[in-house]
Figure 1 (cartoon, rainbow, N blue to C red):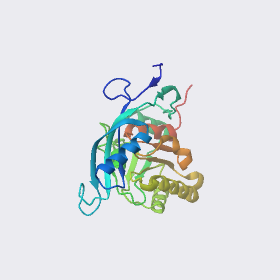
Figure 2: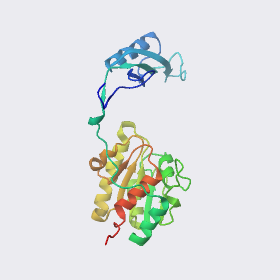
Figure 3: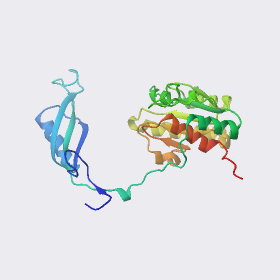
Figure 4: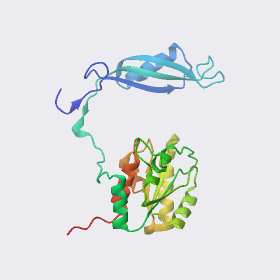
Amino acid sequence: MPEGIVRPYGDTTGDGMVQTSFTLPVPPGPRADGAALQLAAKMGIEPAMVVHSTGIGGGGGAGGADAAFTFFVVYGSVRHLVDLDAVEVEERAYPLLSPSEVNAAVKTRLRRSLVVLGACIGTDAHTVGIDAILNLKGFAGEKGLEYYRELQVANLGAQVSVPELVRAARARKADAVLVSQVVTQKDAHLRNTRELAGAFREAMGESSPLLVVGGPRFDPAMAAELGVDKVFGRGTTPGEVASYLVHALVPPEETS
């Protein structure tokens, strides 16, 4: 196989084996399994095997006889190839800094505390993302932004309305507003982010704080489309966010 061209790996290198899961609005049974295999074939997974199926929904609970839907896990081989040279990703344009480097940059170059607000907006009550970035205990072995002595951090919690967040940002003179969105049904995270960006533009114009959003279903390349300054995807750590805040908000170091 040419250099830079790869196939999925399952049992042996390049065998093309993949596993996927989905739900069909079909009661469990042989007909449902057949429908799943038909779908898998149209997705390019052939031959495919239904390795797990269970009924969901209906009055009988999961797996009940009157379930209206079936959840599947399908395993099989694809012929598709991936050209690594054609992969486009957003490269990080700033260095990763340690907490001491972040504190030093803010103290010596900004010369005041950097004010950061965080929240989950709309009906999203899942604070695990914003807590992982802001709370002292942090995430993935890294302390959250509350650990950074030169950052003044306020976590407003869940289900914060956009107007409320705008008022808080103005009252606290926030330099940056961080918003986590975990609920993604019907693209709620995208709709909420566009509402957020529009509200800050209308209320604060050029004096708007840096707007940063994140969540497991965001594409980091969508920042301009959504009207925000930065988008973080799944697996983002507090250190990455802190380093970006320095990059975006702290004057560069003077060189002689």
